[in-house]
Image 1 (cartoon, helix red, strand yellow):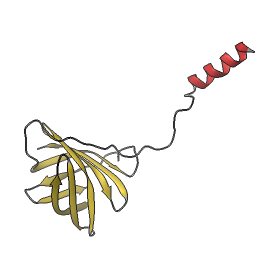
Image 2: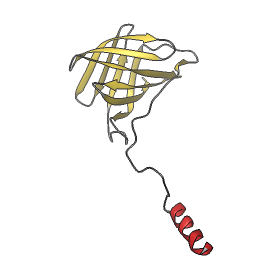
Image 3: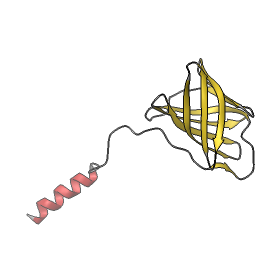
Length: 132
């Protein structure tokens, strides 16, 4: 009986056991500005996640941040509006295009890499880009 129990436990472990197989939500990025640097700039998108992983294959675009405005162009859609920051790493973008809503989330800027994550109209979103 012990041998049978061992075989069942071993088979379950080999097959992944109780690992979750459900889709995972987009990554969350925190930390604010790490090191030195400033948020305003132009960033080439490297990955985009909308809703659940995996990231959108072949997603392209850019994020342009000025002292007051945030513009993300993902494929053929442009999201833009004024933004505010809150310590230590909060960002709120009052989107006016393509619809009036808010992106509420967090960000991390490390060296020349920007990562933004949050919720837009109830859907998770994350963007990762590198400064041009």
